[in-house]
Length: 307
Image 1 (tube, rainbow, N blue to C red):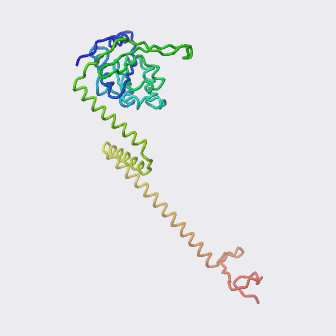
Image 2: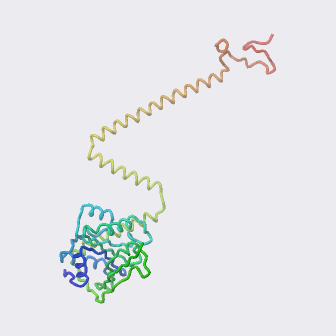
Image 3: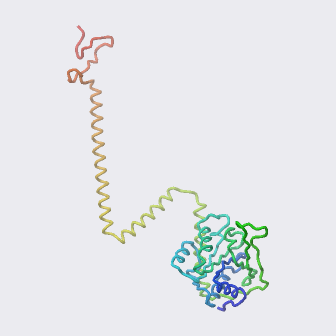
C-alpha cells in the first residue's frame, strides 16, 4: 500500500513536533469511504514514524477497551472511533461513552495519542466534542476528500462577541490510496461484529419488557459464574455448599418443630373451649359448666340444679 505524503500528513506531523496531537473528525455520506480514509491516514502516519497503529486494537468499539489501553500507559497511538453516531450522538449527550471520550480527549494529551472520530454529519457529534476538534476531513467522493483546520476563539468564561469556532479551508483536495487486502479483510470482520452489536442493542431497546426473560437471563449468568468458580475452586466450593445446605436444613427443621408446637397449643385451647371447662380462680380446680340451665337462673353455683 502507498502511504499518503501530502499537506494533511505534513500538518499533523508539524503539530506532533510541537507536542500537540490533534483530534480529527471525518464526515461524509454512507459508503463514501470514511473508514478506509481513517485507516489510510493512520497507516500513513505509522509509516512516517509519527504514531503506531494496529487494526485489531486501535479501532474502538467499546469505551472500556480504550480506557484499559490508556491505563496501560500506551503512547504515540492513533485510535479510530468508528460508527460514532451510535456512541457520541448529540441526542445522547450524557451517555457514558460521550462523557468518557470528552474527558480522555481533554485531559490525556500527555500520552501523545491522536483520536479520529468517524461520523456521517458533524452536527451529530455532541457539541462539547465538536469544540475540541482540530481537523475536519470531508469526503467528496470515493477516495477523495478535502480537509479543514478548525480554529478556536475562547474569551472570558467561553463567550466572545465573534464566532467562537471557525474553519480555515485548505484549497487542495486529497486522493486517498487503496488499502491492502489484508487490512480491508481485518476491518470487515470488526465492522460486521460492530453492526451485529448495534442490531442487538436495538432489539434490546425495542423488545417488550419481559420479567421472565430477564429472570432467565439472570439465572443463566449466575449459572455461568458458579460453573467458573467450580472450575477454579471445586473442593472449597463443595465444602461451602455442603455447610450451606446443612444450615438451611437445620433452619427448616427448627421451623417445622416450632410450627408443630404452635399447632398443638392451638388444638389444646380449641378442645378446652369446646368442652366448656374453665379453671375456678378460688379453688384452682377445673369446673364443667352445666349447659342445661336456663338463662334466667341466677344461682351462682356451677354444675348443680337450683333447689
